[in-house]
Amino acid sequence: AQSVSQHNHHVILSEAASLELGCNYSYGGTVNLFWYVQYPGQHLQLLLKYFSGDPLVKGIKGFEAEFIKSKFSFNLRKPSVQWSDTAEYFCAVLMDTGRRALTFGSGTRLQVQP
Amino acid sequence: NAGVTQTPKFQVLKTGQSMTLQCAQDMNHEYMSWYRQDPGMGLRLIHYSVGAGITDQGEVPNGYNVSRSTTEDFPLRLLSAAPSQTSVYFCASSLLGASLNVEQYFGPGTRLTVT
Image (cartoon, rainbow over all chains, first blue to last red; front, side):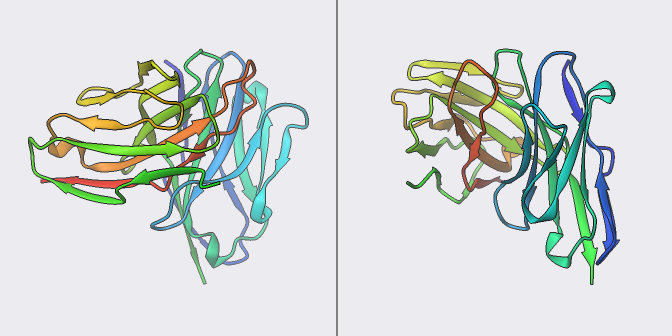
């Protein structure tokens, strides 16, 4: 079955540290890739998306992600995190299976300490 | 343009009660779906619809019913609530084009507690 894995469940960083959150998926067909962020008590917001073209995509708030097709990965990065980045981050994949629904990873809770 | 709206925001039910979670979108999106979010499990698909009159099951459909009588609305019904249905429920919608290059828009969620 198709799946999405986020291996980091809880990450604690100090402000100004660099961030990389891993995301891998298991599906051999065409995919579109997304990272969502959920701030405490709020709903999902789209950080960035990859449809095609340049595998390095830039999103809002200084986040970027790189799609490596050979590794089935779509890791999220930020060079310098801020306290306001404290949130839960979800990787999601849209696969060409006909269902048109996103398959989500289990999420990574990021805690940034001032 | 309100996007995707969900009501109520919070709900407490007793085991065995029924209720309907409402979802509406004003973007003329053909595709609508319901997810539940549980700690450590991300979001899981309950039901989805590709247009009025057409619905199908997702990963975790048991205990939930849906219908799609209009393009705008996609209510989720719990027929007999169970504590295992305590969760946060998100509705989402998107266009339904030939390609996958579409973005899904999420509602603000409904936090449901079943006691």
